[in-house]
Amino acid sequence: MVRRILAIFIKETQDIATNFNVSILFALPLIFAVIFKRLGNAMDAPAIASTSVLLLAGMAGIYVPSMLVAEEREKRTLQVLMLSPATPAEVFIGKGLMTLVMTLLFALITYILAGVPAARIPVLLLFFALGVAACIPLGMIVGLFAPNVLSTGLVGMPLYLAFILLPPFTVFNETLKQVGRVLPTTHLYYVTIAEAGPGARASWLLETAGILLLMCAVACLLLTWVYRRRATALG
Image (cartoon, rainbow, N blue to C red):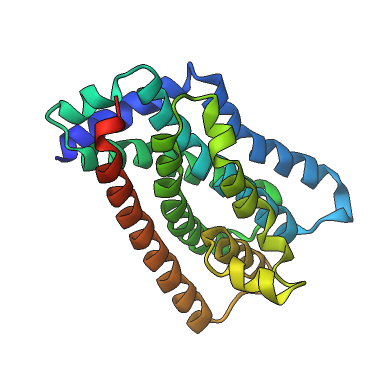
């Protein structure tokens, strides 16, 4: 199982170098972080880090998995993968692992560029991993519904916009606050603000970690259910 997942992970990682659309989704949040940093005193480290990782989680964490799955459907190779010795779970894990590792790498660079204290970065990376792990299965669900790569933007647009734009506005409206609680990017956004700045209470961090783990489990179960329902339409 591990060898098959690793093989899929290596294949997807190698494909990134030749896939401009995927590569730019990883790089754009980093570019924004550099721009924000050059604004001088207009934005501090917590603001730069939280905004940049929100873009990274929403753009790369959701959009990239949707494109990877949709590309396999468009090339009619997804069904071949599913019928190979690798199980559907191994295929999804391998593709998701590539997204997780790449986003973690870019998140690390982002935290360093933003000027986050080095001692806080490990905790931030842990929460970033939990947040993105909850986003990846949802992106794959978009890919299962999108007939091709180009349509992933249209099919998943409401999801992308909600995950990226909603979190900063949850403090202004009670309705938005309640909706934001079900989005992993909201929890990631506020943990980043807290930990990149004065720090957060351990009890709140533990509670947030539990919420993100629960969201990840729910997202994986939802992906499993959607795949089983749409298995005959794939290929």
